[in-house]
Length: 212
Image 1 (cartoon, one colour):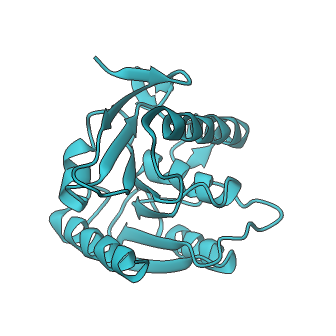
Image 2 (tube, one colour; image 1 turned 90 degrees about the vertical axis):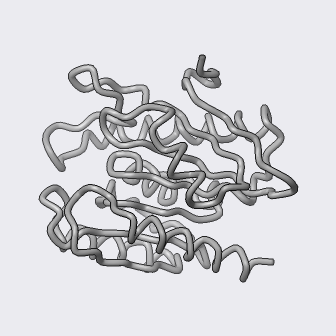
């Protein structure tokens, strides 16, 4: 049975040992709170895992926010849902005694999009993010201050859903806000493969080692 905080069904797996990092796992369309737990374990086996289920249903499939068509987002709903998710993260931080300065988002597709939205609308909430197959969620005014925030952005060169120019714009938008962006182009499509899982794990290890 999944737990619930702020209306979000979710899974929480405590950290092992003295690891103070938490991975906020955000699934893609049709996923749920269990989908990315194996990915989280592969990325950092000792970190706490916090994995909510999106509250929006599209033809019965959970998502984190509504869309009007493929690649066309309902921006009003996106903003509302981003604030809701930020509230969940704050509440879960208190509920589970997490270090609020060491929460890392790991999102795939729709989950990566709302993770990017969290970065842009709630700077400082996340220590950094791994965005797998993300698109530009929105372009906020004014530009937020993400100075030094590390972001790993994995894109597929043959992705039929995310155009290359959209990926480049997202990388540019985050960079303009001051984030330290690593853009990793992979030869595949919209699905994620072992190469970017391994690359993102090594990226996170490096970022955490440099922050000690």
